[in-house]
Amino acid sequence: MAMITLIAAVASNGTIGFENTLPWRQADDLERFKNLTTGHTVLMGRKTFKSIGRPLPMRHNVVLTRQNIQIPGVQVIHSLQEMMEVEGEELFVIGGSNIYEQTIGQADRLYITEIHADVEGDRKFPVIDTNIWYETHREAFIGDGIMNQYDTDFVIYQRR
Image (cartoon, rainbow, N blue to C red; front, side):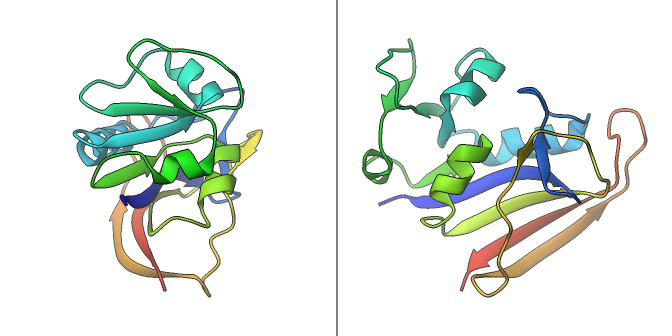
């Protein structure tokens, strides 16, 4: 069974999205996301896939949905049980909020970019319970207000 890692950028108020988009510009975080997930399996919900608009290159793309659909170049699954059967060394859950809620209970690790701002949004990340998760790494990054809109910390959490 693959290691399950949730990866997300999360504002101070828990926001992860607004109207099916990322509500910030963080080029360094997108580059980190690409470097961490390339060569692995990425799992997302149908709405997240639709917002991206295409399969992510150099990754095995899996969409979890209740709908009976087929997407060229994408493995479509319909349950968490099917998720547990997906091949690969590491499975990265990349959103959206409903998928994070459904999978955090099965996750082994969290890669969280903490956005140091309260950002308006309509999608939230689940609360990270420190009775379940402990921090193993933290690295600070200073935003420039342009390509990297906000200061951030990249944090890795491991399940206790």
